[in-house]
Length: 201
Image (cartoon, rainbow, N blue to C red; front, side, top):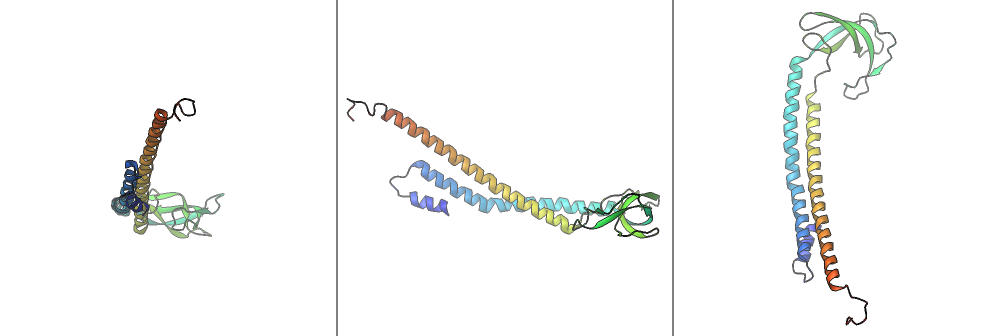
């Protein structure tokens, strides 16, 4: 709004300099780019990110399998740990030694995190593995992927707006520097003898 007001204020002002009008037009152009281009950039980045992440969700669902593991014993010296893979990041898990059968039929044995507060021998719980039974993280959830895509789009829009505002400030800074340089040159031409006697001042 200040940009529009600046253009209107300088429209017929006899004290208007060319740089004043240019500065107002630069501000208006930056405002229009921020309002029109930044949302488009954000939407495009968000859509592309959504496509990539949803493809990743699909691929992970094909390559990762949920299998049932059986507790053999609690791992020695393993206190409760927080599982970062959960939605809240606060679900406690316990390290246990367990057996499980991979999707390809091979038997597996190892130490895993179990979502059991007090695991006992023979308790069963779900884990995620690849086709050969190696432990993997659970597949990315479609809703989580969409949230990441929205955040990416929002971040891209903000970065675009910040870049435009930075360019506007740089242009105005250079214009002001040039204006001050011209003033210095004018003062050098007009005032080197000021204050001296006999100069007609």
